[in-house]
Image (cartoon, rainbow, N blue to C red; front, side, top):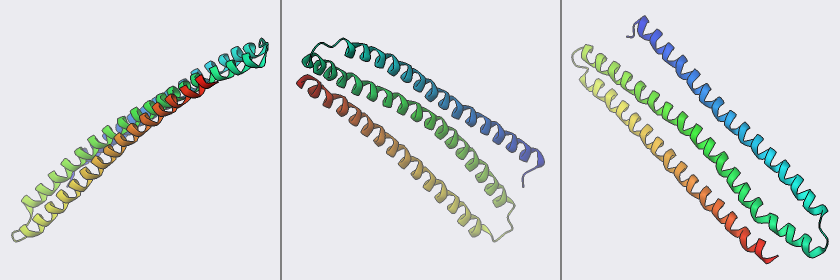
Length: 180
């Protein structure tokens, strides 16, 4: 059985963890807002420059050359923006995942400690019930580890797919821009 001090210490640790996670979440939001502001300022500046260029066009051929020259840089900037956004989201998720894994490992240790204490104080003849309980806890821990590994593999696969799509999109615009 947990003492009052242990319960209070656990609550204090949980509150600190909550505030830490909230702080990390806000850091991620701040980075996204900063990225969007930077991208918006750049887009506005580029739109202004493009408009000025359009106003100075003398013939249709020059207009086509100007328009085709925009395709590749736009695709590259879109890919870079998406990559940066993905990196921010991945970093925030990784921080939360590490924290969750640490909390889960700590909780598992504490629970196993309680099971061991209960086993030591269990009445004679209850060894099989204690063994079943320990076996159940071990099975649950193994299942949790399997889920964590699957999530990590899925995240790695998603990142690889994202990188492949971004590279393909950027590469695909190069021939289009050159043809015009």
